[in-house]
Length: 349
Image: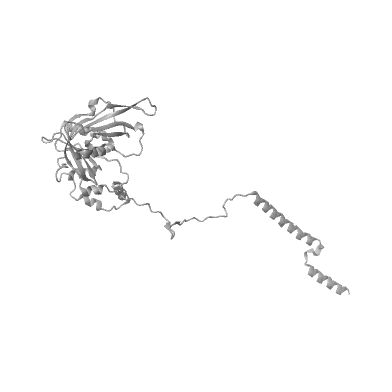
């Protein structure tokens, strides 16, 4: 992968002040912003002005160990010098383009042969870095394919030695190497997914010497069936390192990097608070047609309907019988019949 042509002339801090114009741009900026649970850190692997065969093999092995969580540049980059004033501008530009927060820079010179620089970036600005000299390297290909890292599996990172807690340079080396090989943070891990261990030893002739080894984990049957027996086979790479120059993070930048983002609660619609500090909600219901609503019909309602129908029928039959007993005039009113009878009597008299 070739690096971009050259860094932009504009100030990189102005990019953070630009407001997104579209919803998609807003989502992209939110994805790049700080999170409570960060994504796996990607590593940028690139060459300096001059390199050697040893440094090329070291960077190749680091690229294999990181896998898909790394981006590799294969061209020379004379302007990338993170430990010199002004030499970090090109590195920050490349890291922003590749979306990487870690970097491994390989270089070679007469003054510092086989030089490996590891570092971190915060908000695409150089945070800290450490320069390591490679005194001996045995690449992965020399182990004859003893094992290979499986996709999705995680290594166990082990630091052996009291000097990792007392020597400042080794404390920085421990923090950098742990960030470099940790990968995605998880809360639980299946034992079958732990297939290798990366061991770093603070041992050697001098106080600033480091030994880095990687072993394959083989689980065998032990005396206890619940606890397997562990066997280790070296799988490479094998590195003997010595600490050289370092650059620690500034106080202001370190304070800014340690802040945890304040993620506000998602707004609840149609929910408020009353004077008694209780939740009051408003519910919007659609119009309901109860006439066509299907209801259950218990037996008690059926008996009531039958009794009401029988009473109505009895009332109708009683009114009809009185009208039939009056003969032809049964349909007339009683007062009218009396008047007609009185009129007939007077006419007969």
